[in-house]
Length: 77
Image (tube, rainbow, N blue to C red):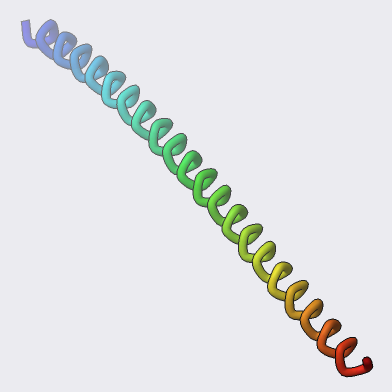
C-alpha cells in the first residue's frame, strides 16, 4: 500500500520536474531570442546614427572648405 503510494508520488514528481524543465527551457529560449533581437535593433540604430553623423560632418567640412576656397579666390582677385 505505502509502496504503491510512494511510486505514484515519485511518478507525479518526475512529471512535474519534466514540465518545469520544459517551461524553463521555453522561457530561456524566448529570453535569448528577445535579447538578441533587442541587441540587433540597437546595433542597427547605432550604425544608422553614426552614418548620419558622419554624413553631416562631411557636409559641414565640405561646405566650410568650399567657403574658405571661395574666400581665398576672392582675395586673390
